[in-house]
Amino acid sequence: MEGGEVARAEVVAPAGLSDVISAALPAEDLKHKPGESATVYLNGGGVLRRVLLLGAGNRSKFDLEATRRFAGSAVRAAESIGVSGLTLYLTDVSADAVQAATEGAVLAAWRFTEMKNPDEGDAPVDVSSFEVMVDSDDLGAGEAGIRVGGAVGRAANFARTLQSRPGNVATPSHLADEASRMAGECALDVTVMGPDELEAERMYALLSVAQGSDEEPRLIVLRHNGGPDSEAPLVLVGKGLTFDAGGISIKPAGGMEDMIFDMSGGAAVIGAMQAIGELNVPLNVIGIVPSSENLINGRAMKPGDIIRSREGKTIEVVNTDAEGRLILADALSYAQGLDPAAIVDCATLTGSVVIALGHHAAAVFGTDDDLVDELRAAGDRSGERCWPLPLWDDYRRQIDSRVADVVNVGGRPGGSITAACFLKEFVGDCRWAHLDIAGTAYGEGKLSYQRKGAAGFPTRLLVDWVRSRAG
Image 1 (tube, rainbow, N blue to C red):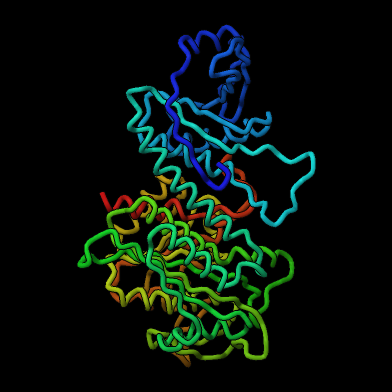
Image 2 (image 1 turned 180 degrees about the horizontal axis):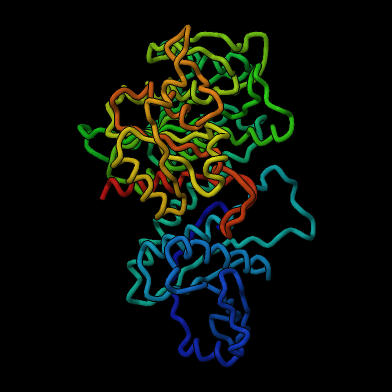
């Protein structure tokens, strides 16, 4: 799976395989808990020489996420014994189960090593090939599951790679170049706006954030034309802040290196658009990524500045480290003008959401309960869960400004909610939902199919939601 390639193979399991395994391994050595493993070496010259038995836990709890984690554990176990090729034997399975297993394996096999010199002598063994073996009656489900799971896994890994590149590499122009390259491979239309086009579009909030950096901002627009021209598009918007020092409201030095991950929403949208194009989903889908840096120079935005957004609303800036909502404001206004069927944005927007939900779920906000429910269901299926928080008018009043239409920070109480209320000001009457992914975009890699660092969240959720809309 180096580079995300997935192999499909039809293999006939040796007759009596279960009996051979039972004879070779005493019952007391069989492992049942998730992640526990045992290896059986088979005599003879058959296609299978070594069988890895992996605990799957309670059968009644073996759902799609358990399948995903099981496949991830299989890759980890294979790595630990120096095996580069892995065949996963699944019986009585659905296409969804094969998809989940494929995703888990592809995600688990990913490493970010492009900035390292090759190791000499002690390089870890990567699982570079993955096959799914199914019963003959399940071949159709197996093929469909591998096709979708492979595309989704590769898309999430692409997002993780973009997330992981350092700020001196992954600039706004680099993000635009990578999106354009991917668009060419996946038959997507792409438009990239620079400072002149952004000025013409009146995207003054995005330009205000970017003016503190020598790196020029970009607005990346990816289009998948899978439906008829008359069909309203689904629009995905992702925050692409490639490095966030906080501006004049500068962040503490400790942990600032993790601010390369402030473009995780943009990376997820680019990754999701890759899978949507590769799978040729029969809908019109548009991905929008506003991208800039938030740094400090003599032109940097200052606390107390009042800026005008594309929507025409004025914004009092009291904290320059609340910049993500500013670049999203212009992107959401632009999305509103596309007459969408729905808009979903995702952003590492607030630290408050980590206090509220920790690292196990994103927060979801929305103007339409059905849309929020759709995203929650997609999150449950994809293993990228989200939980709803309110957008009550009581919270909206916290972003009232004495000198402008809105203020960019509403105080500490309910910080993730007031940030979502701010974004709501720029979507008009559209069906809109916002995912605050600050607690889930990157982490310690505690799941079997994750590693420390970039998680690719919510690439899988977005693809699942779009595919579910296609029926």
